[in-house]
Length: 125
Image 1 (cartoon, rainbow, N blue to C red):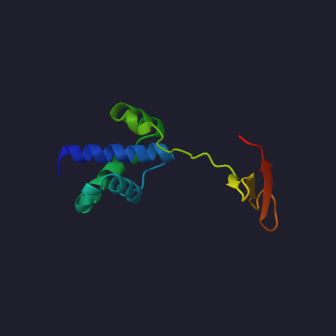
Image 2: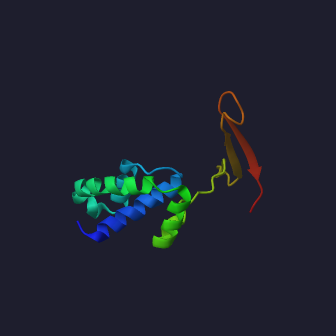
Image 3: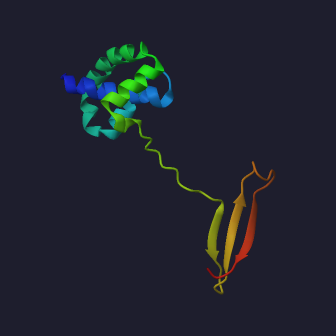
């Protein structure tokens, strides 16, 4: 196994440690790596063996040291990739006759009891 593979695993393990503010777990790091790079799956056993040494090294660092090291090696991995989709409980619906209504299904945490659907007429928009 070459040095590039070790550096690659090291960066992913550091990212996991910084994201979760804890010691990285081998399964989580390997799972993320294999999910993003399926071409590495045939080498999973080799990576798993190498990852053990890397995790021991990262475990000895403080959280601040981990963040600083990741900023130095791969600042792009510090960016959050998660995109939150804007979700509202409202759905526009066109009824027969061309009338538009706004449907709202209120979840039980907001309005306890059986499901409740609110229908609101909408003006032309």
